[in-house]
Structure formats: structure tokens, C-alpha cells
Amino acid sequence: MATRRTFTSAFKAQVVLDLLSGAKTSAELCCQHQLAPIVLARWKTEFMAQAPRLFEREAATSAEQQRIAELERLVGRLTLELDCAKKASSRLTSASDRSARWP
Image (cartoon, rainbow, N blue to C red; front, side, top):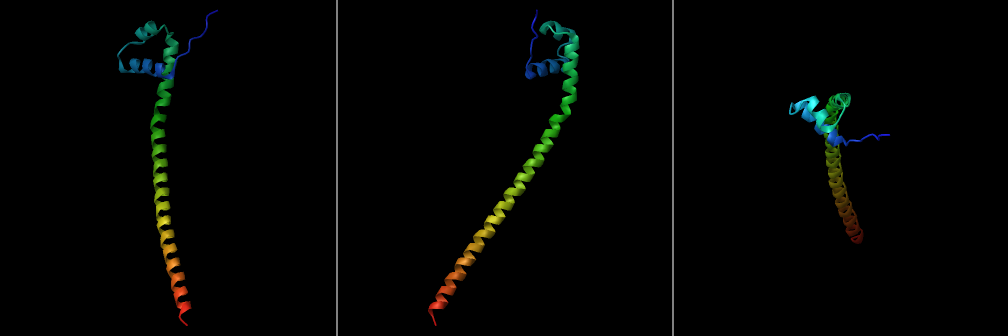
């Protein structure tokens, strides 16, 4: 009994790209890689269905990167505000300590 061959996603993508670019015909690819035409057609259909998602991920990643940048700016601003508050607090406590010594 024959076992099924498994192909990597990179191999499938390369075969489909060869087909779509016109570098080789469907018959040439099937003969070269010993594939059934239906298998190549299914890979092409899957490839074409998944192609738009590549660009959606870029948009999602871009939105995530924008959110990260916004949060980093917020952290920076809050850090500056905290430093200013600490300085003001230390100056006020040191001024009140000095005034307490002078009756």
C-alpha cells in the first residue's frame, strides 16, 4: 500500500507561483513533481483564497504598532509628570522643614 506524500507550504507556494507566473504550465509542473492535476488546482485555489489575508495581517500589525507607540508616548509623559511631582514634593517638604526651624 502506497503512503501519501506530504509537501511543505514553501514547496506548494513555489509550485503555485511557477504556475501563476507562467514559468511553467500546469502539465509541466504535474509531470515534473509527479502531481495529479487536481492537487495542483486545489493548491492554486487555496493560494488565491489566502492571498488577501497577507495584506490584512500587515494592516493589523500596523494598527498594533500604532497602539504600542501611543502607549509608549503615554508612559513617557506620565514618567515626566511623576518626576515633576516628586521634585515639587521634595522642594515643598524641604521648604516647610526650613520654615519650621525659624520661629
